[in-house]
Length: 81
Image 1 (spheres, rainbow, N blue to C red):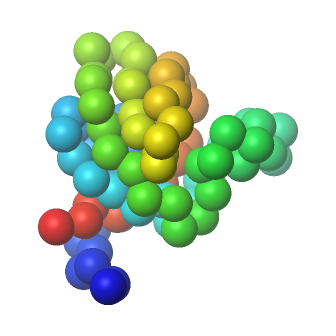
Image 2 (cartoon, rainbow, N blue to C red):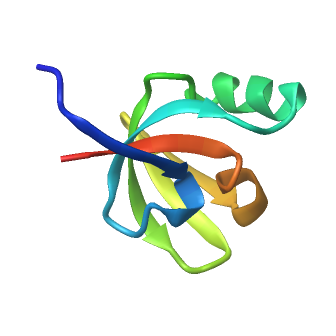
């Protein structure tokens, strides 16, 4: 089932508890490749589990990832309902 999407924003600004879908990234090719290896690809749905202001803990499927603020600002997402 497709879920409606809202505005585009950096993952770092989504907020704790937000469910989002990755729509792209503004970082380097090296960072994009590493994130893809970890399952963060365009279209991936994820949830922000914790945001302590410096590091985000996110869930992508059954995987938990910690992203630093600088990387989280390069991941572009849309909020899901």
